[in-house]
Image 1 (cartoon, rainbow, N blue to C red):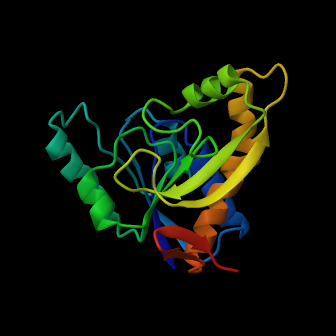
Image 2: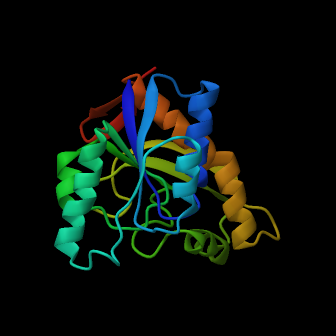
Image 3: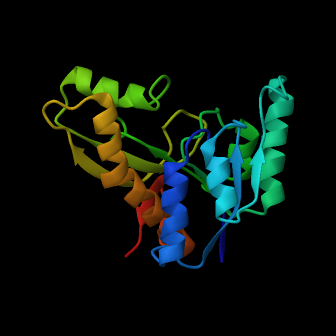
Length: 208
């Protein structure tokens, strides 16, 4: 049984996609053991409670010192007993000590086809605004392992999404969520739960 901790800062639509996929059997042999947020007002915490999942808030407002905060964040993950950490819209830089402790056991969903529109400054609507400003015809989403860089870890899965004439950033964001993010993240977790993702020469290889 794969034990998963989901870290999220906002509404938690990707968290809901994971919960739904477990309940419907798309994801098997997997349990969400904790939802961890940096934001006490995150609706994701409410989603967790409704699903009977332990929910924890580790707030920077309460722990202003960065090193102490990083230790508290790592402690929350360790206390959950999670095998896999899933970043589902978590807008906090992951501490280096956590990346080292959970090497190739932290995955992130990013709303573009990495290496495009990623890295520092590209998050949330800013990604889709960037796509539209460049006139790109195809965007999408990427699930990748987390390393010490920003959106630089080994890519596990990607899915393309069409950019349509007249799209606003909000409309495009919703399409990328519905057509890519909410499908890719459950798919990646299912693969990992069944040992179908292997690291080979620094690359994540999906096994048939």
